[in-house]
Image (cartoon, rainbow, N blue to C red; front, side):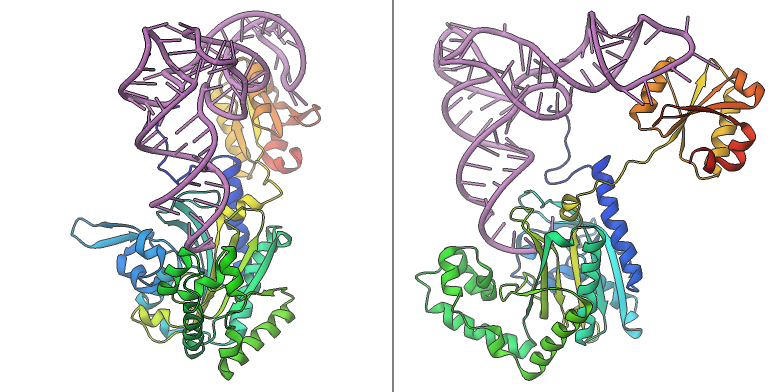
Length: 415
RNA sequence: GCGGACGUAGCUCAGCUGGUAGAGCGCCGGUUUGUGGUACCGGUGGUCGCGGGUUCGAGCCCCGUCGUUCGCCCCA
């Protein structure tokens, strides 16, 4: 009980848990391919400034959640807390700003020093997509449609709703922000403590407050729509029109402002009510200024990230455990002959194992427990005659199969 | 970072107003040394998260600590 345990907020993925995760990642990878996205892998740690510069110093992620450490030569490195900044860095590092657009899919572990909770871990996994180098609303629509396709492929789309918002361009956003500060400042005495802090650090977040008193005040707050420049308004209209064509339903939610500083124009979250307070399952937005902050040219971009753990929890259908053909030696057959049979089946792509240890009865029990599809009995007699008995573990029926048939066409023997 | 609940065998849990631990499942073996998932029999199994305190005596009371979990903050 007090044996050694994994570090707080980290988990081992074993058995069904691992299969669920794999299913999420594989489905996403497949859909990414359909949408023409290529997979990139970037290191799981970066120079600290890659994140501190991009996420904004006021964001919680940077100010208190990063796993940072000094390398032996004194350089500050950080276990990546998210994927987008690293992808932008890679775009610049590899001079791919010369060949835009780039459509990128990625997956892997992320690290944030937060208080663990259901659906929230210190090491967690994300899948993500970024479309770099396209400024038009079509890109936003495509990227959102791809996110939706991933959710559909996993069978969770019906448990999730898309909440959509626009922050407008820089000009719209600044004007709106100023209006919000002015408005909320009048209510200083009634706002919650949390929201007073937000008023200083990130006033847009007040819109997202769960505090009831705040919500009443928020209800009459200035709307983004009133501050959109004509260009930003066009962008917003176009995006929604294209989502309609893609057949993606959405709800316009002014509260979707996102936590990281780099967003503009489109922001969105696919949310569910089935995960307690960690309802956001896949979320993202447009971040036109980020690549430039990373030292590259002005490259517009849009993307999203999704939590693999959260998606895995939503899966209704368990991925099936793989089933093996188990060879059970009977008596004491020549083990080298067994190796020959194992090899012959494996070469044909049949998942084949050998039953180790114990009396025949024990080996049968073990084969049943590991959910074997078939058992192949191999004894001295069988080897001599070149005929083996195959037992279908489902029906319990046995049949004789020749060595030749096994080696030539195992697929139909174990169909 | 803040608040609440919980922490007894691998798992799910029981343990009366404090008297030095129990069940089911699992696991191992046997009934059956050439055949499983059922049945029966036997066995393995716990410094009661950890540390301190109160007490003649604590799994049960008190304090601390670590962990899990729910909510807040934030976020995938």
